[in-house]
Amino acid sequence: MLIAATIKRTMATSPRESRRVLEGIIAVNKPQWASSAGALRDLQEHFAKSDIFKPWLEAQRREMRLSYSKPKHIAGLKVKLGHGGTLDPMATGVLIVGMGKGTKCLQRFLECTKTYECVVLFGAATDSYDAVGKVVSRAPHDHVTKELVEEKLAQFRGKIMQKPSVFSALKVDGKKMYEYAREGKDIPEVPARPVEVKDMELVEWLEPGTHEYTWPKEEADDDAKEGAEALLGIRKQDASTYAKNASRNTKKRSRSPENDQVENAGEQPKRPRTDSEPAMSGALPTEEAAADDAQDTKTEKTLESTTDAPVASAEQPAETSEEVLQTEANTHTPERTEASSATATANDTTPQLSPPAARLRMTVTSGFYVRSLCHDLGIACSSLGIMSSLVRSRQGDYTLGENVIEFSDLVKGPEVWGPQVQKQLEEFMEKEGWEVEELEDDETWKEKMGERRLDGDRNRSYKGAWKGGKGGSGWKGKGGGNRYSKGMDGGRKE
Image 1 (cartoon, one colour):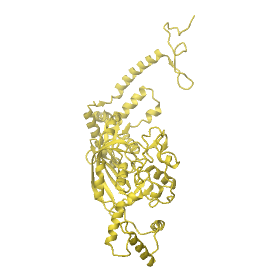
Image 2 (cartoon, rainbow, N blue to C red):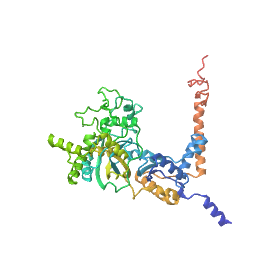
Image 3 (tube, rainbow, N blue to C red):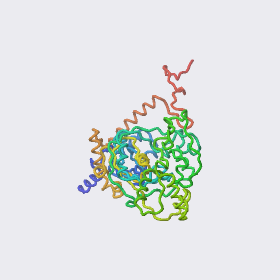
Image 4 (cartoon, rainbow, N blue to C red):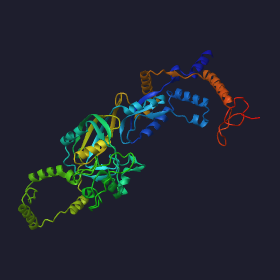
């Protein structure tokens, strides 16, 4: 009987290690299509059932009882979590998570350097700069090569000015940017932000037809395309070849006046000096500028092919051009107008090879937008580009494959992920010099709770009865007013 009682008493008493209140920073590998906030909610559900966080939860409940919190708030308490920088739902990789007072340390992870790996797919632009948006424009991509991309990457290294996505992410005076263009109003320019690219390299070149990345199938509606074209500096006549249902009129987009009074809009875009110059940084290229490199490639292929009807060159004399036209007329070759070419392209059911893509790895400072880099790189290559894949491989001292917890381990149970979480929290607390507190036993805490409540009652007795809440007006003194008299008579006058 004595042995049985001893065993029972030992089992009822929590081990010393389980009463440690752990707080700090951990890192998890966020799965694709999960939002950063959604990932935190999943962690809260798993942590609520873990013995590791029971001491922290109990310590918080005790403090809430002493402060007279509502029972429903005490019962609904969850582990306090926060993240050190939002990661796109389509992206995977390092997500820094602060727990308890570790949430106060998250700012340093917003300001630290990060390493990303992304895939840029050329030839199209979307309203979100990535592969989950709607296509707003297309551009030639046959001329985009590995050598061209490596050459253009040089202008994105070091300290640069970068503009974030101008479509859905930012608003000016509560209105989305493309809505200004859709309504025909002056378009405020998105101010560029200083960022620094510590390192950037092309780690893999993906030839057309050798990868699985594709453009989104969903096209933006005509209004959205019109707004996007005006916002990105595409004139309607320049985009008609590549965008569906584009208007073939000669109306040019309105320019933002220099005296525009939109708040926090930064400087307005300059007027172009030439027809081919974009009206703002990050503007899409015109058809002529985008097709220059592609035309060179097509010309070389034409010269190498078997001789058919001669092709008129811009450098040939007028007589030669006339002879070519006469030859075409004698062979009864129908004239291919721009409209018929576009129709033939739309009706062509021949499988098309996927456009070229490039896998990049970069180390950047805070505030850098990878999707904006993909968009700007496409423009630099006289084409367009979208972000088709994104992985954050490092943030601060946390690196994938080294000290980052796999999110898939959560479903395996606390016996799998528990030791990893505990180790990271203990290491962070030791690094910060935090003293690990231990949860007091119930008897000791009840004694202290009684003393603290007695002191609290004395303070409330001095201040007067509480008359707050519905129908009340706060603390009331003995005389019924919100004041105390020096003569302790309630302020009454005789």
